[in-house]
Length: 489
Ligand SMILES: Nc1nc2c(c(=O)[nH]1)N[C@H]1C(S)=C(S)[C@@H](COP(=O)(O)O)O[C@H]1N2
Ligand SMILES: [Mo]
Image (cartoon, rainbow, N blue to C red; front, side):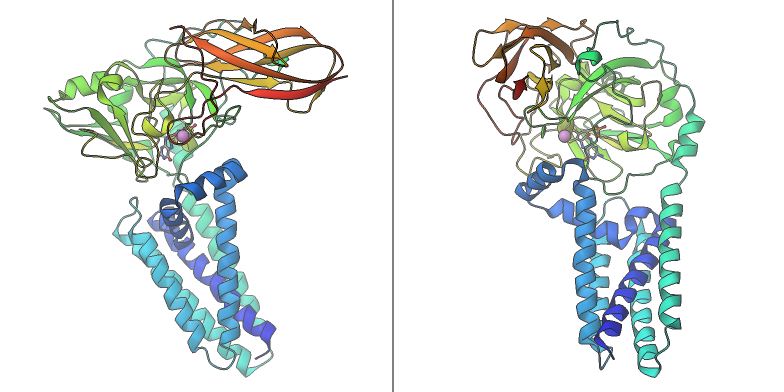
């Protein structure tokens, strides 16, 4: 067999295998797709230094990069297997079976799949082996291209159909059916002058589309509200199960909360603000009756992510949220329900697609990121960011410096700015919306031509000024003053 044809045989068998697995997964749950399952397993076993590097280098595109990287590695293996099988299909078949085994292991160790999920990698392996051997024979017998074309066509169609059907488990329909979520207690209106968008700050409320997204999920968990329920158990007197309808029929409250990610670098983008609608975690836990000795609320998501929050804190703060900005939660942000706890970084509190609340102790259970080197307790650190000018931007001598500051749950009392290490000047603050949200700031300056560096620092309402010492996000959040160098023309 010609080398090109041998390589193509391997590649097409790979495409057929992945497509068949993806197609079957459309019916048994998309995270059973061997490709996604291997990717997800890879994310879970990635050492934290590599994960940090990936997030730093690729930002929110890190998952796409992982999937593309896997595609390149798999294509390499497939070409190699094809070339090694020029005389005899044995080596290639063995490679298919070995890869199939990896797929099976990845799928069965996923926390969010049922027993039927096994069908997906099995279908992959069968399709891969069959197509490989069929094309191998075809290539020996004739110079015909028909078999190759038909296989390629079928495989691509199967993959696309799988993607479309799997993604469709009608979440949008379920979201639409939820309709209006009118809170009994509305969050106060955001007053005029809460943001300085014209000066370069973000808008006070972040739209669902612009809201930062951080999670370990390669495919967004797709759960219909009708099929969802929240289990409350552990160290409680009366374990309970709450359906979506039971939650929405309670007195819903709305709170404006700024969420922040612990992996945000100084000056980084992983912070957003929403109007969240839901019920208080504390009300539910008090109904269940917390037992003596418990100190952790351990929440688990449909896709197996876990977070542990201090129990005494969530008894007083935080929501089981089912709505954001006047709508049901967007699928990427946790539909049907998530936790929102102002003042704690997301990884220890903000479980999306939450299905399980376990009242337990810190001694007994550890959230997802804790064995990966992050702190057990992670209150948000006071911080501030310069949004304009941007680094290296050219601005006129008379300019406005503007940005964002946050210190949930204490609230921001003051933001100061200094230029080229000179005296600190107090910035004008945006209207004070709530201590659980960020606060925008601006300062008009007149500067000489040339290069300048501005720095900012926030002080919270307890009088504490943010730390100057530059610390990395690991283990409990970055510190340091943001600085930006720009040019006055
Ligand atoms: N199920 C699940 N929930 C999760 C996570 C996750 O990986 N899986 N990541 C957490 C982290 S680290 C953060 S910062 C917030 C981000 O919420 P957002 O994506 O809605 O902004 O979600 C939290 N909830
Ligand atoms: Mo995070």
